[in-house]
Length: 312
Image (cartoon, rainbow, N blue to C red; front, top):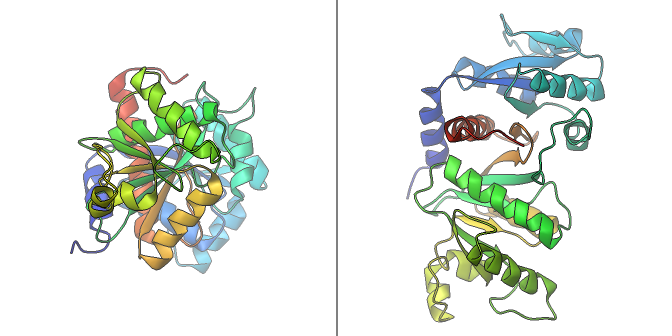
């Protein structure tokens, strides 16, 4: 069996060779968020700008024997102000990513999605977990388990395209998306299965592009070849998916946490659909997960630069 964290370590090692990503770290006022940002800077993943109350950040550093050194600090008196200032740094071209510190997700995302001063694009903002699941051959992208509570079909189009684009940024050789429901047949009594059928037809019509997409698929026949074979599902995705699109936030959150706490998986997190990637960490994240989240953001920015397409 592949050693734990092996997929993440390969990702981190690859990104160490790339230029550090200019990143506004929003309100890093506890030990875990400040340590993660400084360690990512130390190994060359990011070039951080710490945004928050200077005195509090310096006190946390001193209490935890952390060296800030020449890492710049931009003063912001409280968490909402830090989120607004960090977004402003992106709009001024001084940062190419945001990283969540010790503030609530909705505080940060509130500043990101403001119509006049935020970082909106034409694409719906959505969250992806990039999971390192022991015993599963591929990294596994799960979306959306953190931002969109009960997405509409129109919103799922963007959520799906964001996840596909991320998989390409992560250099998946082939992107295979399983759109999940509780069953593998279309049942009018189960609305998610009908939406899945519509999404798959949108793929056929090139409204969504860049991946093999199939569904509805139940979780077992999405990731287990034997389950797909027993159910006689003839599909290039079934049994070997590397992207899972969930029907709603509740399903996605329970799936991701089940993998983390029952299967020992790690879950790097990133928000897409804004002008820049947003590294969305949790207080419970391990150091390797925090570093992997920074590496994912680095690859997203690298892919955007290489595409030459402006973010709208």
